Image 1 (cartoon, rainbow, N blue to C red):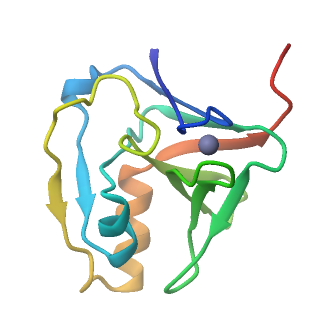
Image 2 (image 1 turned 135 degrees about the vertical axis):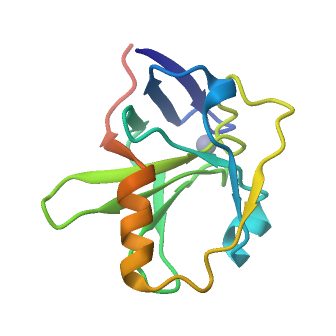
Amino acid sequence: MKALNGSCHCGAIHVALETAQAAADLPLRACQCGFCRRHGARNTSDPAGFLHITAAPGSLTRYRFGRGEIDMLICDECGCYVAAVLDLEDGTTIGTVNVTGCDLEGFAGRTAEAMNYEDETDEARLARRRAKWSPTTVSETAPSA
Ligand SMILES: [Zn+2]
């Protein structure tokens, strides 16, 4: 596996998506909810890969809305929306990265597929996320010197 790297505008939050796929082969989705439209978010994830999010201390804001199930990770310093994560009942976390918000390498110029999840049942929503999102770690650490 290789890692596709990105970060928020100010660099406080670093994102690495480990994947065996080429970026061009990964899905690219534009969720049509009010939050994602405001950010112009284009998201990807690889359920067979891993998403690692590393944030400088105090740089991470977790924004919740709607059902309040997922955390939208936003940089407290520069305001970029970098990823959405969901903590599962078994204690693991899955997530999807906003390639626009963290300028993830390999996605420049690609058009995302518009996705409308409004009519999903809660059950279908969870099943979709489990099937498509990446196992994820979120850590707040001091940047190495
Ligand atoms: Zn930032």
